[in-house]
Length: 272
Image (tube, rainbow, N blue to C red):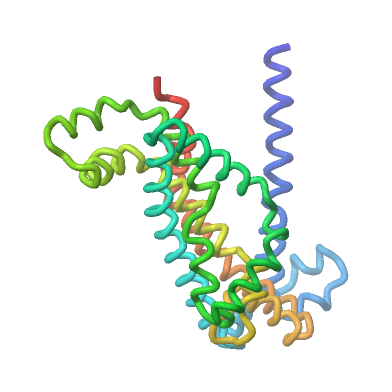
């Protein structure tokens, strides 16, 4: 029964994996065909000649490069801000006084439970009153620190022994030295996970960039692709090519940091 259960679990995992991979496979397949909408069956689509022309056309058309650069700027700056500010905030929540940390933690968890759609209108009014519409400030400043990041770093730091910090203080280290020389190296696994999660979330973000930008100079890639769909009259080949280019940084990020992601997710469980 144990061997049969193991086989069934593996089969189920393979089926789930194929279901997750198929949309990516379909996107790449369609992007490599010239006028894919003309094919009525999957077999015809597979047998059609392969071309990379759609990728070249998508890259050179409709300010695609500008959208790509905008997404990169926003995702990188927001990721860096979350690493720094969530490290500071998580350290304060984990090492602060009990009364302060209890109130702050309740506030963080409460904000974490609020859906983004609820704050959509108040945040838009605030951004409009600050004059940040059609600016990178609207896409960056509200997301420089997130309740998820604060909670994640705080929970990880609770498993870090205080003795290392106390030893550094006895040797004459100040709080900033303790934070950057002792706490930061220990928290690198969880900060790596936070950085990757934040980068992916902001790279794929559509709702708020769509609300806060009205000009092409500040649009991010997901918003640009949405407008690209209409301008190309649903040209699926070019649209899938653009989506493939936008997915490439995410795939590279996962391939390069796959080991770091696993280490960050399991590090807390391995500590005694």
